[in-house]
Image (cartoon, rainbow, N blue to C red; front, side, top):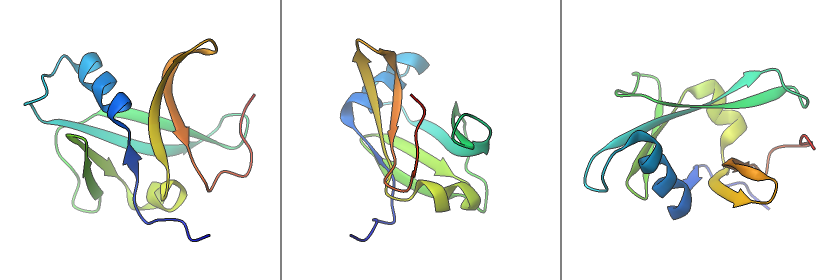
Length: 105
């Protein structure tokens, strides 16, 4: 199976990004998504609200959210879906990454 060359954000995750930032649906929200060294599997995901993309960023717009990813992180994140879980294991953003070989328990 070929991994799609984009990153997705579910409607549920987009809603929670807006809730956390205090922005209304009509207002722009930009979210920087990256991977950094560390964590139990060697990489951790990083999310932060950011105003402007850098010249070298890959920019994707989905469900009213502008996602900005640096080129290095994009290699690891292509095909990933960002979701939000409010389940029994805790609340928070969840990355469903088809490129990840292992995950933390």
